[in-house]
Picture 1 (cartoon, rainbow, N blue to C red):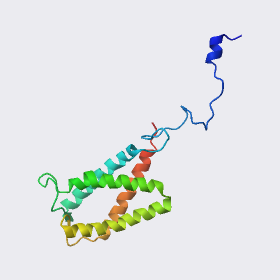
Picture 2: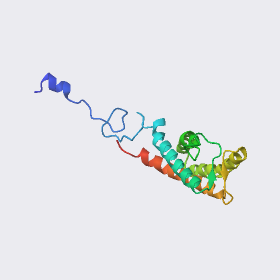
Picture 3: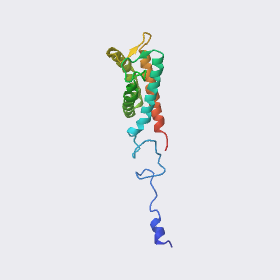
Picture 4: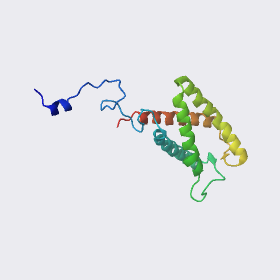
Length: 166
C-alpha cells in the first residue's frame, strides 16, 4: 500500500507528444520565441553578417578603385559609406529575410532576382545624385550578380543560424 505522499507525487497521466504543454523532448532553436516562431532577434545574426559582408566587399572594391563614395560620413576615417553598411544594409536584410520566409521557394527565388535586378537601377540613380561613382570599366551586370550572390549567402547563413540547437 502506497502512502498518501507517494500517491500525490505519482503522475496521473503520461505526457502526450502533441500537447502544447512544456516538454524537455521538444526541439528548441536558437533565438526563437515560445511558439517556435522566429522573432526580430532571429534576424540579428544575419543582419550583422550582411553588414560585415557589405563592409568587406566595399573595402575591396574601393581599394581596387572599382567605385568610390564622394559623399560619405567620416571621410577621413572610412573610404566607404559606413552609414550604408551599418544601417541601410542590415535593415534591408531583415526586411528581405522576413518577406522571404513568408514565400514559397520559387517565389523566394523570384524575389531575389527582382532585388538583384533593381540594385543596378538604384546604383544608377545614386550615381546621378552624386553619392556613388563607378570607374569607366565597371559594368552593372557585376552589381546584378553581386547582389544575387550576397542575398544567397545571407539567406543560407540565416537558415543555418535558425537550425542551431540550444
